[in-house]
Image (tube, rainbow, N blue to C red; front, side, top):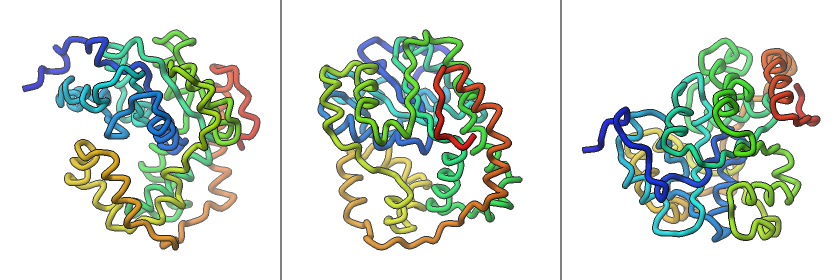
Length: 291
């Protein structure tokens, strides 16, 4: 039986990850995961999102389970869990990371906050959630959470307060897509042996709306079931990818709702103060953002 997390000793250094990509959701973390998986320069989890440090209950699967996720390798271990920057739902995650992986380098990918909210809404639709139209959705708890996830200054505050700034790399999502040097900086930060080689590898397009829309609805529904959770935690990643490729359709099935100008304006108004706070905290300009 796993030791209660409140009594659990910090992870041994050979089990703790060397780096964690902590977010943001819908900001290219899946593509980054596949880039490092294909590079041969890092060890990444079989379950793309282990959520190991999310809550004390999650950690009850035990250190041995977490260690097995990375296999037997001397390569840098990089975990990927965008749920770690959902502070409004999981307020103590940063404490668990600090206790058990306090030396891990952190990576946070920041996408235009408004575009990220829109992407999360469409992602939820594709995964079978019954959401109202964007204008009606704005007044729901689901929308409040999605907006909070895009409040990057708020989400990152505990990490800024309790980690050395040199141990946190903020990556501009737009740069990651078009500037190969940004991938080199990520590689340098997480400690791979040849970061320059990362700029020669095309960043895989994974988990985009088009990619998800090519999968049948039953696949998305299964993902949220207990069976789907077990598959994600225990099935080899290659098996999951082969299954996805086998059932993927070349034609898109779902027509996703558009966000009209008034909804976008409401999102801009709600997210603008935090966006300015994030610019000040990171000393980054994010000139292409709409807030």
